[in-house]
Length: 272
Image (cartoon, rainbow, N blue to C red):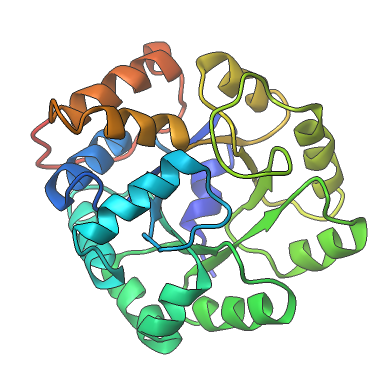
């Protein structure tokens, strides 16, 4: 199948921002996504809020809780994606745990995600045969199931994961949960080198990337850098001042000075 995600990342120096859908509210979340598309995002990860986000650090946990308290569910996440798709061609990946997807219904999600313009789905806690079955179901709708690998993943499992992978490979930089860190672990570069033995897909590195210097470091050995907690922290800091969009914009100016990202996407009707 034609994979817009892979195409968007094929030239390297990719930037993949993560936001929790509906945080701090639906309207602001949409404007933030439009901003990210306008400012060079290669792919946008749209987090589906979940009550027990076990792979996430406290910053993203709190954002997920805020969205849930606002009544955000998978239906509203898909609606946000559809509105973003109406003005931007940036690929969108749903970042979710399995429980919300099972509650929604996998077949229903395949159809609704396709209608909403979703390009891929990353399910944190779907592995092995379950992940393979989900990947085959999504592929029928031209949707890629994005695979996660970690420094602790054996070569045997890496080969199996890469054999069924689509879109890109998400390499977790270090064991643990999401959250900004002071430096990029050497484990990340070693993991990317191991993954490249088994796939030609682009490889993105995430978990802990929060500075321009860290993005540059990742770009030296991987195809894209994923930034999540740093963006979500700016959104959290805006709760009293209600300036989430401008705070995120200032962060992007720091992360990607002088439009260093090589990817630009159409954004129409933006009020930014």
